[in-house]
Image (cartoon, rainbow, N blue to C red; front, side, top):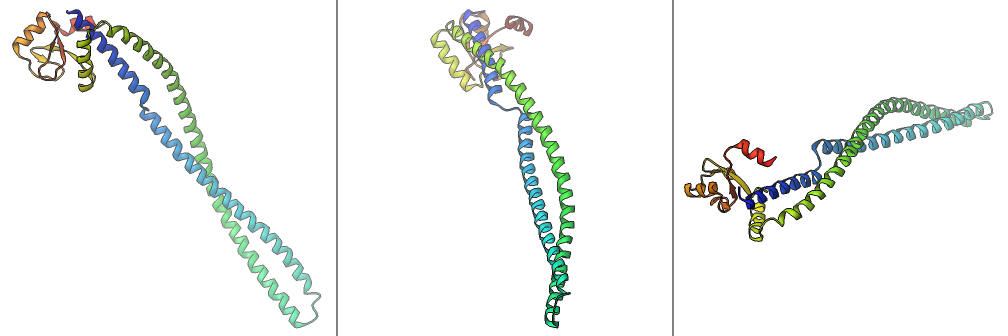
Length: 244
């Protein structure tokens, strides 16, 4: 095989691995995305439930304080009945007693309703809190694992970039310029095998004479359709052996 072809194949292997690592480092895995979305959803739900629960408890406390104060006023009003001096005062005290009793009854009834609502919200809040804690833990564990993996991937990426600097020195500038242009235009695939007179990059038939020239390996050739560089192996096993 031509040395120029071997150098391009080696360079492409390096470039493809670099592209693979860069994609991995820049993209967030679906599992991590889903966990992040679930974590954010549960955080919002947790905060809403917590706010609602605190609001209900605050309202209950205010009602209990109000009822306590009105019970004190009720006791005082009942004591007034023994000291009133005329019917007018007596009727006024009775009206005060009726009003206080009605208000106390309504507030106590509201407290009972709040207790039921608080109990339901506490159950929801507890369930949400437990789920949130579980998802937070899973997210942190996955983030830690990915960060650890990224360390080795970044290290490999740096090593490959250094290796690439050396590899490009083995490729003629004119060929390297074409290689870079083709890679950008052809999804990182600039050099491919030709098999049965077919370019395995675009899967179009190449002219018979070009196929012969590629097999002769006298000079590096390009596919007339996709412009990729072409090389020839007798069979796939031979190709795999050369790549390993």
